Image (cartoon, rainbow, N blue to C red):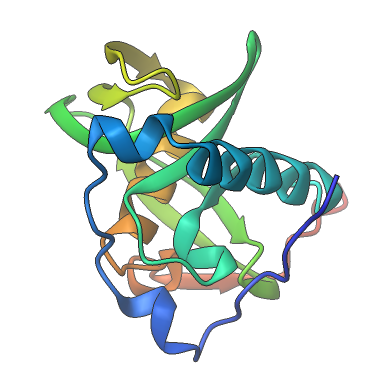
Length: 159
């Protein structure tokens, strides 16, 4: 399967808000092919999420890795957030070799449209909630480095 180059911090597209997709666009052969390319790219790069901006497309489209398989997420909207936040280390395929501590909501509820054009609602917690928030940020032109208070090395400290 064909893959795409990952855009890097400094490229304008990473700072753009994606365009919402219509059901007709989502179901089009070209968009279905783009979704497959995004999934292949995410796996090739060992990612757990990928936003369209990260392959140079300014669209409201992301892939989120899930234990039941990869979720194609179109036009996501986080409709509920827990009061409690959790700080954890994040990295990004678009900011190679740099990690940072980011506070994110512990649980969220997100509405989105799947690759078949069907509306979905999902409650997510833990890592899945973090990935949804990270990718939704990308779709709105925000990178995790905008939210970090401390840059880290990405290595596990020795005890």
